[in-house]
Amino acid sequence: MLRRAGVPRLLAAASRGLLDHDGDVLVLVGPAGRPPEGEIAMGRVLMRQWLALSRLGHTVHPLSQIIDAPATRAALARMLAVDDPARLLSVVRVGRPAEPPPPSARRVR
Image (cartoon, rainbow, N blue to C red):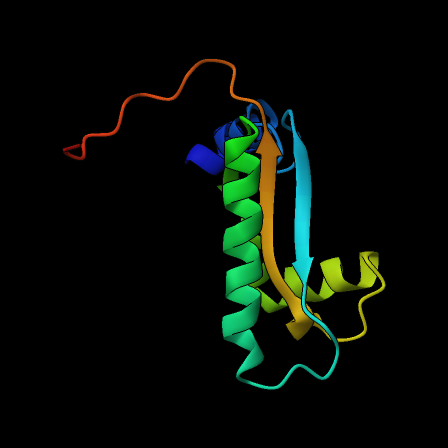
């Protein structure tokens, strides 16, 4: 009934696309031929980049759903001319927040 009324189309038109927001989209691409133990090293690279961006006042929002689905991972790899979609390790949006983030609920000593 909702489909006949056009509700899904209206909802889709009202929502902005995943990448249609302010900020930049960054993709971490691993080196070709990376051995399995290289995953840990690439995780460290990702964390260092995330912390450096945070130190500079940027916020980082993971967009992992893009590379979680094989079809979108393959499409992104083609767009970036990456030979092996498995080399795409992380997709994030980076930008300056419009307002300060809320304080953490964690206890601080």
